[in-house]
Length: 211
Image 1: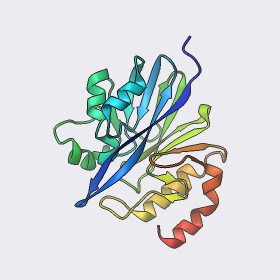
Image 2: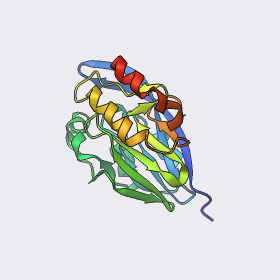
Image 3: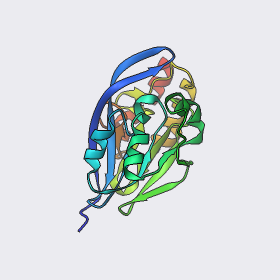
């Protein structure tokens, strides 16, 4: 028996670098599947830790919510060890090449695509703003959204660095994420989990503040 499909959580630590600065960060790695098959969302920092969490299960894909180096640094090594493809929205190639100039992603993520793992559908939502190719993954059967760095508990992802735009992320959140069922659990790229209904009342406030 493969067991029920579920969401597993791993935290890895390292650095994020862009625009000449480097910061220490803790990243959430999300593993979705059952006892036989999983996908990894954001293979961050530590390939050994990710591979240990996957164990002997078949890894069907390494999904990148965007290509900032902290989220994709371990992706090629995880793919090499498992044979799983690395999937990324094409609009984030410019960021991907900063970390992996000699290794392309294996396939694209396109808005509206559905990835299936352990019988669970993960719908790709293109949500630019934090990065041009940022995506979220919505799993209605699990009541879950994997938001990368687009939406956090308490506000939108950062837009103060290259290839980001505040107005765009606010539009993405308002039109693509906060329209989902209120009870949807939001599994973020960093920090605590939240829900759509907890964040939805604050969109106008965020837009007015400009952050």
